[in-house]
Length: 167
Image (cartoon, rainbow, N blue to C red; front, side, top):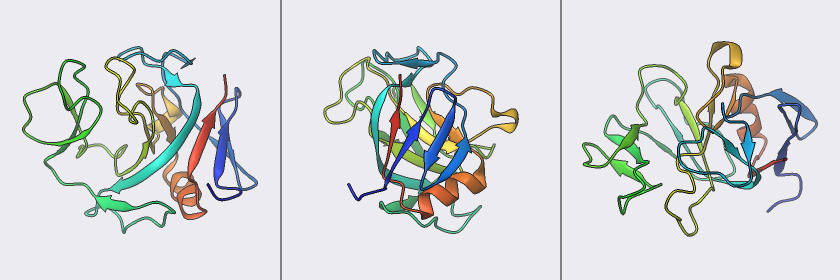
C-alpha cells in the first residue's frame, strides 16, 4: 500500500485522510471486532478498498487509485449465508437473498467495495461492507461507512486505498 493511502476512522466518527477530516455514518450496531451477518455493525480492522462501483447515469467515473466500473440495473450483492455466492457481486434476478446495487435513492451512486470477509469468505462473518454516500442527517448504516458525496469523491481522488476502523 502506498504511503499515505490509508484513512483512519476514529472513535469520534470522523475519517482522517491526507490531512482532511470527514464526518461519517457507521453501522447502527456500532463497531465490532466479531462482526456477524445482520448485526448492523461496522467491522473493526483494516478494510482495503478493492474497487469502486458507480452509477454512470448519475455521475462521471470517479477518480480512484483502484479499478472502477459502472453498475447496471441487474447488479446485486448476495447476503444469503446459505448460498455459494455469499458476499459476492451477482447478477439479478438471483435465487438467494441479496441487495440491489442499482437503487432509486442516491446512497449507492458511488460504492467503494471494502475488503471484509472476502479473502476467503466465511459464512456468517458479514457481507456487503461498502464505503458509500451518506443519507441526509448521517443516519446509521447496516454496517457500511458513509460519507457526503463531495467527501467520498475527494478521498477517492486523493488515493484512498484502505480504512482502518478503530475499536
